[in-house]
Length: 385
Length: 133
Image (cartoon, rainbow over all chains, first blue to last red; front, side):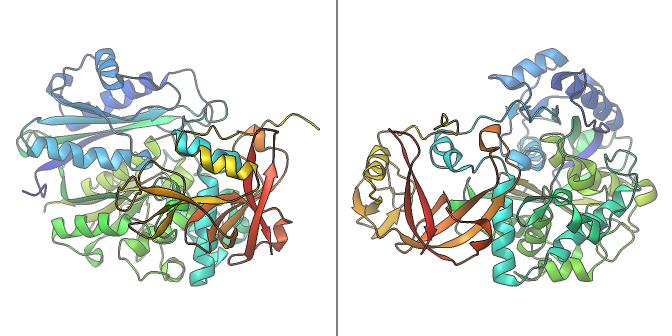
């Protein structure tokens, strides 16, 4: 049995991120995007019978899904927290499709939202990370990605200018996205490289900014999708893989489990990377995009730097990539940062890309990445013509 | 000497021999007889064959920098006392270990040969760091 074409994303909701924590709680933000996504789908709240949610760092707790469902007045027949870091949103999409394909649900609400409170509240880590990582200062995500970037530069000759190009092209996309946090002025490679060095070799403008916000997606069965307001966006392929939690213990720090995840997604879809009209790879850092394009098969291993240098990654370019600006320009509202790649792919495929609409966008690739290139989820999404 | 405010390891029964050895300035790792391979970090079972037969063996303390970063802006206040070199060192015996390189940042590069340096950060706890050979 395959998930191919069993379910479709039919509605989205997304907030314009705020730089400050704001007065609302994460639950309130979840409620807002849930209402927006359900209305966008053309459904009513009573139609929702499945519920997948991400645990907000700002207000975590046990029995989270039932608590949130109670607040929203939902009666789900399947409910779960998905806890695979930044890959959680993409992971929710295929889990929703799997539940629908198995006949357990008809319309699954997937929600993530959070507040920018990383400064005073860190995510609790597992004991092995507290014991063998934290004492040396391997805390947070910056360090791991910086070490990936250094090794990538050493093994493949990847240049700082090539990494910076990712942030620059994605900023050009953000200028056309009213929801993006950083959409007021373009960025140049020189400006990226002149920004403050945070963790060598990564500069400030190569690192996501934490913001407050949220996003939701409704995934529905073919039967429910007939009632949708917008063209359904079908889940054609999905794949997931993890092979480490801390990058030190990964089999390779420059080759990620995106490879098996993407291979599985493309195989299920019966398509290849070259068939994609656009891509939405997770971009917590510039180097993340380069490694993702290599491991997902858009270019050869080690060629990611040259690839982004040679291609125009803007919405009007020859390789549209993160047309919403990526998280680097959109901002990272906790796990909702990962959902921004899903919502953008859905917008593009529904033909709702506005000024940044990719011409003839029929099929797109999304990647969700958790931890330090740890958990990976690849999706192939399609609009049927 | 000011109080040590950085996080300290809290050993588990599986890892206690590692930290006790470090306190004596010895580097010991678990070794799986079946896989003929060293294991780091310490575990209850070999992550490859899942055998419980792991034995503690001394290792050379020599290795090279697999990758590194200079953390100029730390994620937590306790590491806010200036830039530090965080690294992954690949030991001669195979395993990779998260550590610090005790050297000026400009001296550190990928593949730099290093040797173990035991940092007695508190009377009870010694961290396993490395310095250039």
